[in-house]
Amino acid sequence: MLKGVENHSLPRTAAFFDLDKTVIAKSSTLTFSKSFYQGGLINRRAALRTAYAQFVFLVGGMDHDQMERTREYLSAMVRGWNVQQVKEIVAETLHDLIDPLIYDEAASLIEEHHTAGRDVVIVSTSGAEVVEPIGELLGADRVVATRMVVGEDGCFTGEVEYYAYGPTKAEAVRELAESEGYDLSRCYAYSDSATDLPMLEAVGHAHAVNPDRALRREAVARGWPILDFNRPVRLKQRIPGFAVPPRPALVAMAAVGAAAATAGLVWYASRRRAAATA
Image 1 (cartoon, helix red, strand yellow):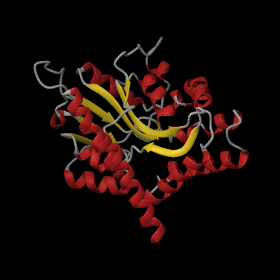
Image 2 (image 1 turned 90 degrees about the horizontal axis):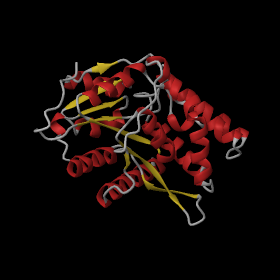
Image 3 (image 1 turned 30 degrees about the horizontal axis):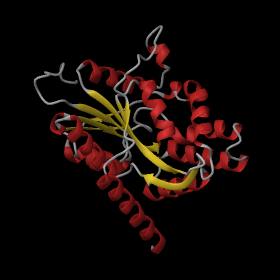
Image 4 (image 1 turned 120 degrees about the vertical axis):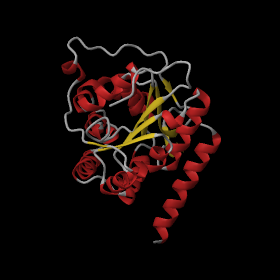
């Protein structure tokens, strides 16, 4: 059970949520592959490849190397995509594709944290163009997501500006804590993957949600609660007449600190070099 309503004389707190398989039942990025295909951004072969990656993700989860290969493939695939077109496709298909995938248990937790006076922050490796609209749909206050470099022509260059993965997520959480006055010892974090251990270790109340084997072992060893989410449901079915109220505090971490961005890209590059020489 969550603790009660925040005492506003105390430091502020937040709940940090990973997105894929923690709040929604699939990979947020891969879920839009059919829409991108219909919009002419990818060909049939690419659509089938992303569908297979979604299958692997759902059945057993991707290990680090599989995720890296998928990310590299997606980075190369989006090179030349018009950013505005991507945003329009996501906006047009968001409710049909993402709303049915939201775990009822996760939506309830988000509501409980808001009721208790905590900010809700989505921290996802998926791209900002996908994660930010999902954050709005969920009523999140802030979003941290991977950002691709956009050229002067308004298209993705294929280069990664900020990679929200591994220790970079934890650094973003600490930067938010400093800027917003969060007391991390009283904050919460939720994830399904051992790659998010740095983020989970950064808070006082870590939770493993639908954890992979490695995270389950860590959670058991550390005494972290293990939550099983298995009831995807449309938000409108949860609350008749549901409409997400506008949350003016929703902020995308468009400009994370230089230290976090540099650390993430250096770590990402070192993993790529290690894989290449293995």
